[in-house]
Image 1 (cartoon, rainbow, N blue to C red):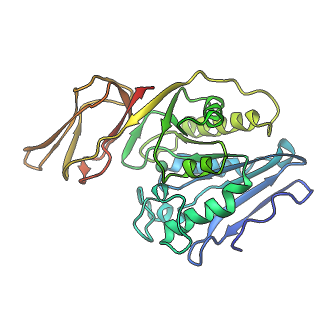
Image 2 (image 1 turned 60 degrees about the vertical axis):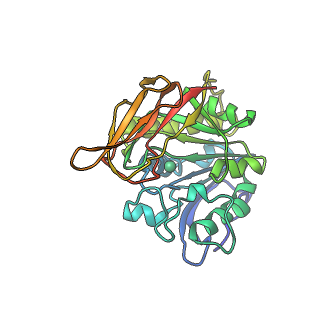
Image 3 (image 1 turned 90 degrees about the horizontal axis):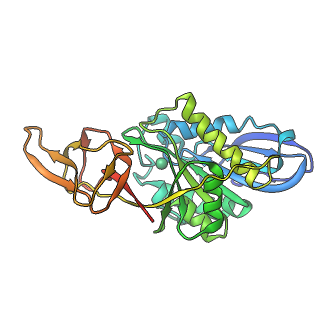
Length: 305
Ligand SMILES: [Zn+2]
């Protein structure tokens, strides 16, 4: 099966299975069809295969009962299955690429490009709204925030329903929710928990947020409270050199322009690089690994928009 099954059969149902976006990929899915017609919500997780909080939240979401909802819920709980099994960070092991930089993909590209293309052409067009669940990878600490495509009011409204106070207005392209936004689908990318941890409180923060979005789009009864968002942009310095990373700021800690954010040293303690903030704001996430490689993201500074 290279396509997902029909979203509406006319009968409430939970259908589980595997779909083959390419010859070499097989990914799990759930389709929950409600008794009444209504919106289609797409939820994906495991674009980064070791962000386990997002994956466990999606796994739990698959237990949503058809009787509970209007419309259809599509859940793809682990897009990057190989990375999940291998506990890889950032990349798809098949081609060494970060899937969340590959959108909208290519039909004849590498594995991650083909998967991105399949999502954009086969799956995104079915959805009325899209949530791509993420978190801090195994080597990243993170204070929760929601990314939305900058300038998209409907996406920002989803973020306000999801309920995390900090919302990052993201520009650029290549990432999942930008590609879906370009198809006219309101989309958010919540980032919850860090270091691959999947504690009960953070998994629930994710599932509760998704359920509020389901209320917001009319899939679940009740009205989602609207969170007043602190909308920021994110500045991400990359490591100029490979070495040992010594961050100087904690998650959520305010930083001033020019302030020291961290240092990269040799194993003998010689300083190779000092990282100073080019923004005034606060720390959204940071690399917690002592080991850093040239060009890797060191941290994110949120600056009020
Ligand atoms: Zn991620």
